[in-house]
Length: 344
Image 1: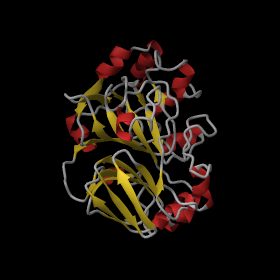
Image 2: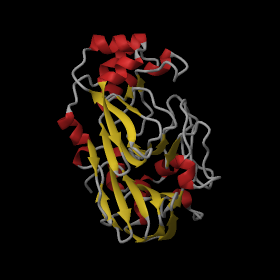
Image 3: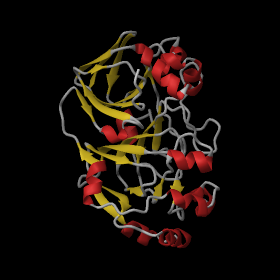
């Protein structure tokens, strides 16, 4: 399905499932989307699509491997302008600056948050923190449960006590319960405490790290050290957003976009400096950009300057910048995930 020069970054590349083992259970949504035999369900709840990012503390786990056996990460570093475009490469080097996942929560995820760029640079030796966003593509019939942001301001001492005692009930009670349904999106700024409920299936965009501060580690992680990544809770709890999130604040980050246009922006301007996402359909005209395409329904064709590729439900592709302008044909519905906006 891919051309011999797959690593050069000149044409679209089809991607198989890439499911590193995680600490929590998945459901059957990734397999149902991709097709039986193309994905696994045993503790592979995340499909890291077109990943140049490794799991925390790992050398290669999480990386996408191309058909020629090379890591996509190394191919992008070798040909950054082909894959990413001149302007992006000038700013970020050979880093796409975005990680895309399919996340299938077979159980409720623990209460956790992620550091900001500034916090990660100061304490963790990472250029990027981990702001993220969720595009909801599946839930139980009556909607999915997520918990986002504290209902009111909380003191550092209170949060530290919850973590020390592993008081799950208090943590969840302090968070806003939000019901989500397919078509909803949630922008999750760094520091915002959150948990995703069982049965929620998302396309997740995030900054390219695996940095998580797990407030609720008991019954999820092997040890407390995994919760604070070895830095100590006295350090990492300073990254937690302890301010209150009322209904008005939540409306800024939880959206529903019902639109049959060929191209629909899903995340809005607040996310654009971190990543962007579009729902694309037949008739869409796409500008040149590194992008990850996740086909959710239907079938069709993506026509690029470097060639055409067939796309059907469950397919995932990485489109290099050098593939040029593209058009989408057919009854396909897909999510197009893009890096931060960079001016040419």
